[in-house]
Amino acid sequence: MIRRCLACVSAAWLLSACTEDQSGKRASDTDAGTADDGGTDMDAGDPNGTMDKATPLVMGDFPGVFDSLDGREDIDFFSFQGTEGEWVSIRTIDKSETNLSDTPLSLYGPDRVKLAANRYAQSLLGEDLLSRIVTRLPATGTFYVGVADPGAPSVSWGLTQPYRISVVDADLTDGYTVNAEGADPTPSRLAMISTPGGQLDDVFVSGTYDADDDSDAFVLDIKDDGARLADVKVDTSGKTGNGSTTTPGAVWVTDLSGATVIGKIDGASGQTSLTPPLDPGKYLLWTSHPSAPLGANDFYVLRALIAPDNPAESEDETNGVIAKAEPLVVDTLDAAGSQLQAFVLLHVGDGDVDYFRFDGKSGQTAQVSCVSRGDGSGVVGLAVSARNEKDESLADAVEDPATGLELSSLTIPSSGKLYLRITKDSQLPDVTGDWARCVIGATGLPATSD
Image 1 (tube, helix red, strand yellow):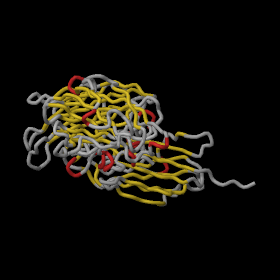
Image 2 (cartoon, one colour):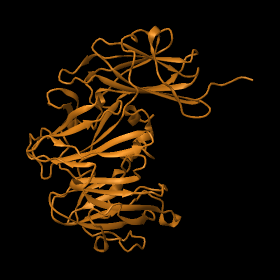
Image 3 (cartoon, helix red, strand yellow):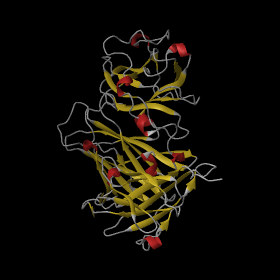
């Protein structure tokens, strides 16, 4: 079961052709060419197989130049003119839907030393994204982008991955907002995206850390479009990420006054996902420099998707006992009814006990995944118990903020009903958000006798 589904009513609006393990696979393969030779002879006959023969890109020309990767021996180079301090977004997209291989990007500075890289970016349905780098240019001059996939099939196979590549000024493009230093908070310039699962508001927010205690704030405006969440993700730093010389420190969401912290994560400790459910209104998204000396090019890139949330718990006042467990809305994912799935967003107050009922089929294999503190909630010690109709435990788990909470290989009881009992140990004193999200899935059909 894919953990990202915890933050959505349906994965339909979210990601296309993406699984959890693809985003970081073969990280060493993102390097296209080498830093000292201007490229290699791995060009498979293409005219732009070295930096010296790079195809020029025009800033702002989107979707950009067409090219293709013809196999693992192929390498394509592109160039563009940039200015020190300029924020750029470099993207490869593919509308052919062939998806034969990745298009790993490597960005090199005017000195031809690698600055940043990205192999695979999660893509919204209809976005057709293959890979993307959002970064701050550290110098003025000619920059180079290499595209190569050493993990692809050989050129001899005759398989081609088409793509278009572009570079745009992020400070001038909808869906990107660069912090205006000295003018916090900075209003976010959201891009509206229509997907099969509903409308999304999308924005990359970025800025420079000017001091080792610097913090920046952005305004998020949540419209009255039903249950929404702010799905905030922290971009990877360093040469295998966006090129920043630091990892963001704390990232948090508050009310517009900044006084009430709704959700908070620590990027320096490895947390990268913050997903508070938000009512309509205006909020602040904050980030601060970690507790470390200022680096040579310290900046941050965060992406915030304002998206539909899971179905919310509706019987919190009465579902404290198994006899009044709240039934979940179960979706059937196939014609045979062998794949079932349900989502829920709940609030776990102090001393709260919540029971939910998942209606499956006797003998099916079920799995439960939940997240709370791991995505920035103030809940401490989220505990989930899978139970039968007699309120007997089948399996129990407590959330690890680093790895989440999962109950797997559960067998749905003969009644066809699987119950969840959810509680918590305590609440962080400085974070008011007490949300948790769970997804429950069941697969397989019970054996039948003639």
